[in-house]
Image: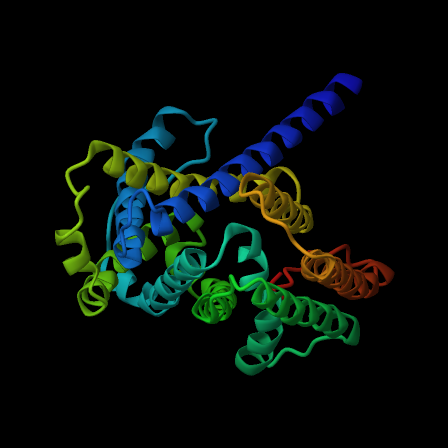
Length: 344
């Protein structure tokens, strides 16, 4: 028993560490690709489009890997049904908005402020769940959202005092938060179309995104920027771009793996702690000097997000217990319940 618990603990710790390393590395790598003075590439949509292409290629090869190594989560066969692609298209539009605004936010904001800049996802979860799904939110959860909003506004104010704030970056962060929330809601609606297979959904999302990005790149001038880019033939540049795509597919896998070996609640707490470590690491690497109120704003955002996750988990658990108790009293056994009322 002791050895079993020890092995399980080591496996969980390894997965959590892997999630932290991949997620933080991806943020810093994307920041480098999007706004590094070494590259000077002003084509954020092209960077995002290329990562979608790499993700699609990775899914192609992973479809064979799942058959050869049964211990690895089985990946779906690589096949595109245009009818399914059309059904997934509304979600793909939100998906494109999410990754575009996320990368634009990262381009205009420093990594240290990036977490605060796009911290309103939880708030938009509450708003969109009410507007789209008609779901109400408890007072405790609303108070947690209030803390997050307070931390966001304080962070914007403090970052503005340093003279490093980009209001475009903040606006993109708000739009990214909205798209993340909408993506979670529409994912629940679209999952049955792809047999509730997350990897198949990722396959169709990236397939649709490749075509959705093409007119956007032309309109935003990314195509022109690429033609005039001096490092367009550099193996180093394409190597870093490809690495970004690998991280894109890896974060999807390791996120699902962390939820699988722990729980959705632990995953959200882990993500919040990772964001805190990411902020501290960025400040240390860039040798930034921040005020006490700046740190307080980060603490409010992270604390409010964690508290919201815990509150929603407790409410879901209480609702499940309340639903199953009558069945137990009537001798009808316990009926499992899938509560999809909240997006955490």
